[in-house]
View (cartoon, rainbow, N blue to C red):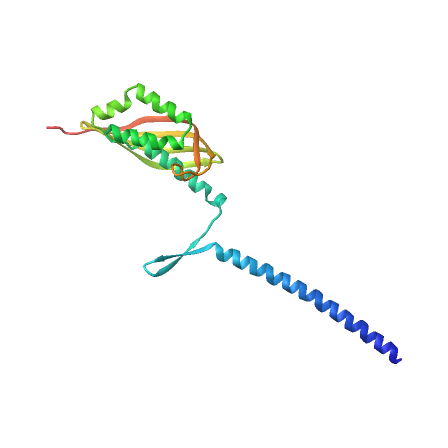
Length: 202
């Protein structure tokens, strides 16, 4: 009887020890997973000091931020291509910067405008061209740009609607293309006058 009691106690002690060991492993695993999750979340939180005041900024993945970067690249390209002043050096500078964001379709449009005397007309008429972005619509890797172009001449101010479209592909980021986006198959769908207001000249 005593031997049976000892054997039962040994079995119970073994069972409790083994159960405690398994429970410890499970608890350690859960604590490690929770700690890893907390560290990962903490790494996504960045504090920026603004005059000794910490401001929380959240880190996001590239995939989450990509649509915003696509819009920024499209907006920047159109700003470079269409915001022009009657200065040949400025026009050349704008076009050179714009070409980092576009494939041969943009080069083709630039050469076509140049052959038609578009840039010479800007210089001779002292026109100042500016673009206003209304919206940029994304559909996966395709986009449509809606905007208004203002042409301010000595004799009149012309406002035109502008609609362009193209495709977007990811490329390695560089100093000249920080968004890592290349616009391809770019074309102007619509560019028509909305208003033509004459100026009083004396």
